[in-house]
Length: 387
Image (cartoon, rainbow, N blue to C red):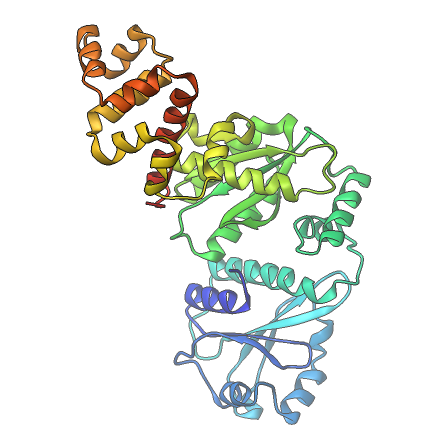
């Protein structure tokens, strides 16, 4: 779950120094674990959860609330070390400040400033929830509200995006869900997202996350280009790309919420059940989408399909694979033998030695369909760790 504590912890780990987020009144919002860079000002603010009156007066004299760029603050006169005050602003207000101690520490590098910039962006997005009554103004603010938890705000943002010709209703708008390894740090994930959203070669806009998958919106006309841009950026950052799932906006849908859920589901299915190139649209994953919604365990297979239960619980892997490939190939012996690399006589021998409940299912249309689906269901459960 993305929150202020994640931001300060991730940033502190990345830049090698502790981090504080303070509100416009110098009250503590979040603080990273304390390292060796703590001083009397920091320890006092942590204990009191806010700055002292003397510190507030000094900070106010610097007009930090009007700053649009990072400000170096010399605190030696107050018994503290030099700090970098990084403003977090939207188009209207100063929302917060990231405080980093710089005195007596190694200079910040270009990569550090990139991480700080990403942390500022995340903090701004998190604080946007405190301004729910404000109408989004800039295109970035509108994009940031497309998956708002507030349905009215979400729909208004979508209407605004359509009115400004940033998006269109219907199939021409596509949501992309990108599944990255869980080991990728939060700031690295967000840096990846920001780069894709600002690259000249990409028409993608980052709109948030669902089920730990990064979500972007773009145009269907740029489908292949956008997929390639995602893959190229992952390669450039040496990030393994687990899967990409897509879903198109339904013209009668009031916003992108449903498309986002469907794209996230598609990415999850592609990761669990690999598809060509690691990419697929939810429209091509109908049976898997159906199966992914089934809640249960192996014991329920006895109800869904006794034949599948026998193959998965009491049968061996050879029997199970033979039947699965046989059903995938609609019973065409030539295709099945090619897939299994066996002779036709071997196939018939295996089928003849199947348990009676399996042979009975193969001779009944409905039972045969249930058997096929349940074999796929168990594969999906195994791939996603549900059993």
